[in-house]
Length: 208
Image 1 (cartoon, rainbow, N blue to C red):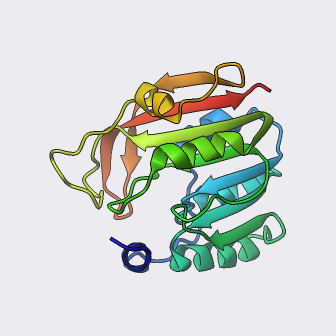
Image 2 (cartoon, one colour):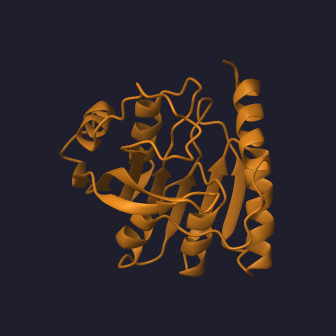
Image 3 (cartoon, rainbow, N blue to C red):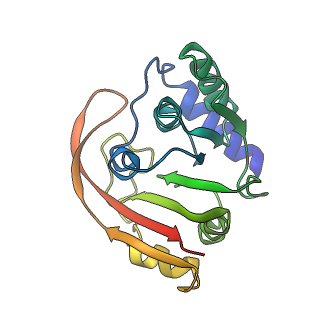
C-alpha cells in the first residue's frame, strides 16, 4: 500500500468523526507527565489532539504530527481557539519518509498502529535518538482490541512492551527502560461506549 492510500485512509477515519471541541488526553500520558517539568514535546500520531492540547496547557511547547491533514487542520484550529496557538505546531508528517527534526524532552507515541507498512522499530529508535539527555519516550500500544477499534482482526497480536523495547535495540549505557507493563483500564470510545482495555506501556529515558 502506498502513501496516498495511507493518507486517504486516515483522512477518512478522522473525517468520519465529528470534530472534537475539547478532546481528552490519554490516561497513560497524564499519569506519566504530570510530575515532569515542561519542555519541548513531540506527539507522534496526534489524532484529535487531546494530548497536545493538554501538554500545551501545562506549559509544554508541542510539535504534533499526523499523516492526516484532517487531523492536523482540526488540531491547529483547536489550539488557536484554546489560546494555545503559540505552543502547538501541528504538522502533517509521514513517518515512513522521515522523522521530525529537533531535540525533545518528551516524545509521546500513543497507539501508533496502522494497516499500512510502517517500520515501527525504526521510527521508535529514531524517537529515542531525538531525545535530549534526561528526556523520555512514552510508547503506549493496544494490548487488546476495543469494540470501536478500526482493526477487529481476531488474529491480531500485540507485541509486549519488552518486545517493543528489544526491537528498538538501544544501548543500555545511553537509554534506560523505566516502565514496561500492561495495565487495564475502562476506556470510552468515540461513540461513547465503554469497555475494559489493556494498554502496553513502555517508558524509556535517555540518560546520556
